[in-house]
Image (tube, rainbow, N blue to C red; front, top):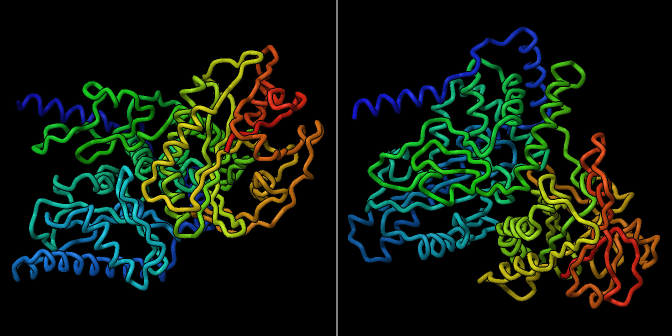
Length: 584
């Protein structure tokens, strides 16, 4: 037994053995100062006033959950002693816990309650109603049927994500140690902090990588990319490999390592712990067949060790690897004094990168209904991507845009999600005349969405294919040129909603309604509803030969094949049109 423990300890030590312990050179220190200045100019640090407000909000929320448990104990008719000792506590995790949050960031919180306070009735009903009656609380949303049930709201303008954990205790001690195994699922941040050689260097590097990921549109766990914990784990591993490096070195090493990483080899900060008295399942592809399908395993260090990136799909993995390679080239240019660090954090022109897009239009009659309906759709967009990947056998690669577009159309509120489409590099070649019919995966997705138990009148979803205009404006100039209302000749007024910016974009006029070949070649073409209903077909006519190696990625689809829309079945003459309209 002792021999096995020594072997495990040695294995853990070997796993964390650094690749280099070299100290930074004078040139690297100078580069790090430039990076620090770039970060300061990016506005990543919140003001002292906002920091104080966050502490006040957490204190107020802690008092509310304590009152909540007291009310429950009274309603249950418990003894005066139980009512007196009734208690609950608020803990933080995520970016706030790691100390890398920025202005406007939400706070991930965990409410720990006693055994008699249930999630279904007490947390999502009693506590929900108490928050609803609190004047400082706005935009309250209960997401009870998600993979991780949660209450989302704003408290004095601070966004809060509140989870609940019920312990097998009648009394929650005020000095509860959250690192105990009984609630260890939510303390990965504590483990990460303990496993990195320099916490200050780790935080500075993580801020840089998070900013880069948001700028490049790959920061979203729900969309199939990586969330905050996954990015923190990737950065922490680089810190372990280069313990004496400064942030500028670690940022460059981050992209150097992960462009060469042989996925699905897992990223781990320590060996997976299995011998706990709780007996909870841990990530182990040898024992769990579902773990074998994980494409980009990033393993959490706290027991039970799990894969934090299980949402990653073939498409999103390829997108992230492409961005890793692009960032590595930028870092090399920075090291060669060809560009500054600001080049690394330039926003990704998503609408310039693809020729074809899926537009998922979500509508509701009120803002509150839209918030709930939109959250339901967003949490299941990954299923649409998986269905398209499976149905097309990898021919189409999907890139979901992590931010939504919000607009007002007459009496309806709406939100739009966009997915970029192009031929998958690892997918089968598109044969001449091959039809790529997406009707089935779209119908399956809409069927899944329509299972929403709290659906109200006015809640609707439309899935439409859009072909980018040849002269469409960039994302920086405005997104209105692409998003044309299916029944309108005008482009809706749109507001870009993200964690970093929220500014209304000017209303733009769409191209004049035409059905001519000229309009079809250069513009998004709109047709009456009766023409596009139940029609979801793309005909791909390809030319022989491989793609030129010097062609940019965004031109790949058009260079490889010309997408045609077959109108012959609908009574129209067949035109070599570069769009396809998808059934709503």
